[in-house]
Image (cartoon, rainbow, N blue to C red):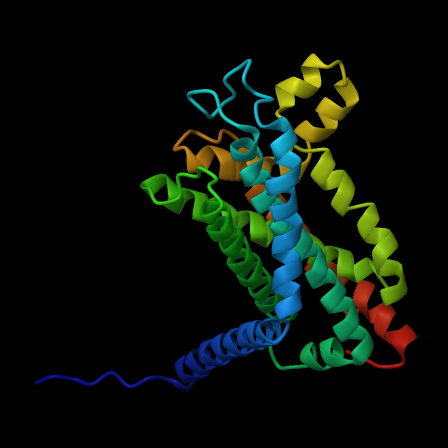
Length: 289
């Protein structure tokens, strides 16, 4: 004689909570995707910037690495092949920082206050926002890769290593999105955004291996630039993508990226706690979250 196991009220509540959380994730991600689909200029601007570097800037340095073989490459490479992973990182970096602007705007318009009062854990709401940011970053990066292939850039994306590169790209998008989330805690007004970003985007990008390898920096005697680039988390994100594309061991880069992702996200959740960072912001704004 078979018995039918009946669910308890606590199990039903837990199941309902999971369904509610997934519905919130879907709604927030789809809202951001829909909003992005209505902003064609945003996609164009996201592609024009790295494509200009690829098509124009790289043309003057096409054979800059003709004198040496640079890891993870097994042969001489033109400059556009070297900087392609860095330009993918540029797409991720700029979209991650743009998400910070969107968070500040939503906070000033009251949307974030409304969202953070929903009966869901605050970290989950922030994770939903982070997931939406990362998804948009990945889609824009893939669009850039497609255009780069069309103009003749030699990238081994249609291989098994390409799947590893997609994982690296996604992790980098999450890390930079979490950094944007953290910055949005401290940017109190839209007017402060441009100045703050100038102290984040440009140092992170130019003090990295996006445009030149680390050994070139050390060889030139720029020791402080070399050390800054070594400890730049954006460097690790770019190197993970670069090494993954060619099926090589990225070393500590994945652990640095995932560690920074965790730290940035935890600090952002701490900052958006109403008893700490975000609570002070809502008091100034005249509302409560």
